[in-house]
Image 1: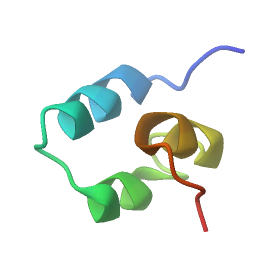
Image 2: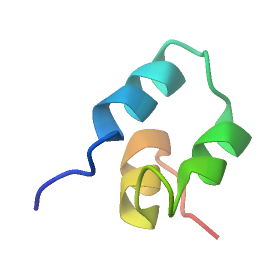
Image 3: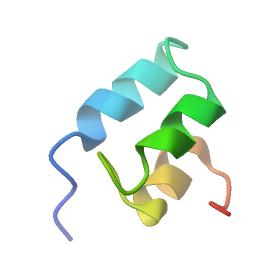
Length: 46
């Protein structure tokens, strides 16, 4: 399955600790999907 346009950017920000969980969650529906949130964070998106 193809990733969202900004998936790599969001993952990089999270991995570099520039973004916290709340910031990644706020990107769901705008930049990434709920499944991508789970892939990035390892947590279930609520």
